[in-house]
Image (tube, rainbow, N blue to C red):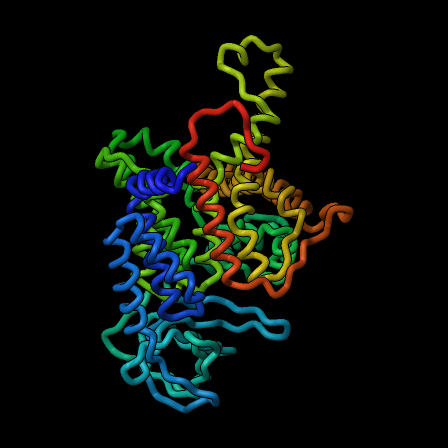
Length: 489
């Protein structure tokens, strides 16, 4: 294939995905301005945009990079803790469990001089109410390039200020108490409360899911929003006309977003959900990867520092893997699990129909898992230095089983509000099911409990790998139908 033909393919693809191209350019510009993104990445991406004649994306790369540098490029440097007095605006409050103590951690912004510092405050014992801003005095310490901690000696409330952090914290505590009262086993209550609130208090639970590569299922993401919208859409249609059902689902997702609080995966899930629902309400066509690009752009504009967070990188990496790589992987797997026409599948005997359905589900789960892991494998090796092989196996079936647990939790809560005896019965069944589900993570097959280790994975390798995958995905996406399927792509 000639270079001119490849350029036409890329122009055609990005012409259909302008928001995704702009969002990626903005993220690269921020990484180049604030973080250790290799120089060649910025140069190569800029030249690529010039070849595509995407002047808006070039302007976005430069302007948003400058915007990020103006916000955070001049943060104070310090080697030792400095005593200071500054205003602290609280954005979140949650429990924090260390090996020896259980604290609470306040996260928010510290307005120190002319700088707005991302700051965390750890408190033990009696704590300040997180419903307002405070004038705090204490020792400020730089944790990393763009994160600070403050050891507070004195809190002074600032009048005429407010924050949802305290209300959110109390609501989550009520959810935990409610589940402990309605479930028999504390282990099941702890797990379901983590699943509902997105806050993992138990270190053992975090270790077990991390060992199997399932920690992304505990963090609130599009998976949770999808299950919740599916649950509410199943009966909201009885009360609202079709068009206004989308508005009702938007209200539900927004209330859940307020309840959970802001984090990179939650922001991405809520933004893409919101854009999707409003496109349905306005009856406008929407491309999933374009919605993802719009969410990416809005998120980095709101807080450029999210680019360095692992949750941000993994959540967008997973989605890009699904949107860009899954069609090619699914096409490759079709050679192993051929698809039949509807007429031929209906002519199969009953047992063969069941086997064909199971094979289709297995192909779909395996395709999604492979596409996601192909996309995020370098990130996992870069941040953690290893990749558990059991992650490939457990991600085939565990997300589906977990969605049943979350769907069952919502059903039990709704049933208990309408008929307490039915709710008690459903909570009993949910308790037994959840315990069996947790046994799968506590006692994995030891014969397969191995990991791929690769320490010292460099950041520039990630960008080279991503460029290679992007090129292969766009090449496969634009190929004409061909009965011969390549060995890899």
